[in-house]
Length: 397
Image 1 (cartoon, one colour):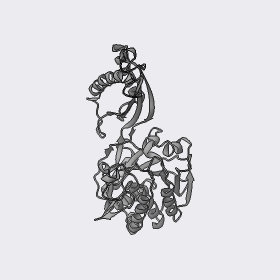
Image 2 (cartoon, helix red, strand yellow):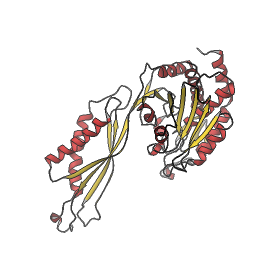
Image 3 (cartoon, helix red, strand yellow):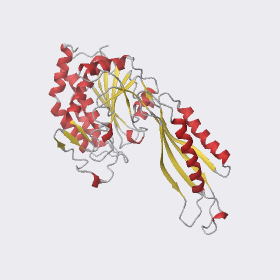
Image 4 (cartoon, one colour):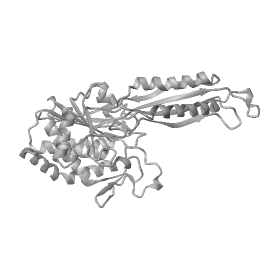
């Protein structure tokens, strides 16, 4: 049940809906496609709003075109709750597949279209406005709220959230990540592992291929057996909240030209890791499968390397952060059960350090990274109410 202070807070949030809409429109119009990942215009827009209400605003970067902002209410107080979301977006792809200009932020029948409208500027904007409502309403906060727009999430987060955590620029007690969850409280997602497999051969003229060793042919043999083994091993593995474990052979490169026997071939593999799986064991399993194939096919000369890894996320359903967020959700008319998140997020950088982390945000994940990406504005307004209520309750525990 909402207290009078909470009702006043939510009324303040509602009074800022016009500003929230304008902020989201401006953010979508600020092209921040990654790569190249230049988020300076989007960060400037966020900072202009922060400067109107935050007690402290700082900017941090390890790359001059990828700023990360930290805006705080009651800085230095505890508990500290972090609102984190990203302001970089994926490329638009084939423009011919769009019916709306990806950077026009068209609004049709209450739906805002544009790249990043859902992923994740549609989360960042209501986080900022929720913080402004907390300040403007005058409600008491015992703890500190930090709002953190970051860069570089779409290519791994190394220059954004990961860098800020590793340099101790972010040290929150609790974290809410803004990602697309249909405004549900998500407490788990899979980890991500990128690995590269390389086969080596020997060049020769294509008219006498027996004088060489074809690395592409060997890769074909290796992948055929690799896929059969991976499918068998992953078939029975499940987690109650996330999609099943998965792998994807995403790229393949090899050879010089058609009349030359290929002396090299490489593929990149994306393996998604359940919260119940151990990342080191997953890496060892892939290495074991490839080694076993090589034992049965000693002519294959293959090597492997880890390209990128990020751990899974899981916060207990009975953790106080989860319970506080779920109770706020129920009070605002949302379901009271936690869900999982289909993709990966910057939340892993906090979760793997033992910091309780959940994900909440408006929109439908299916429309992210798609032509005509869009988000219903009523969902964005509801997200602002939810963020504000969660922050108020967490910071007054």
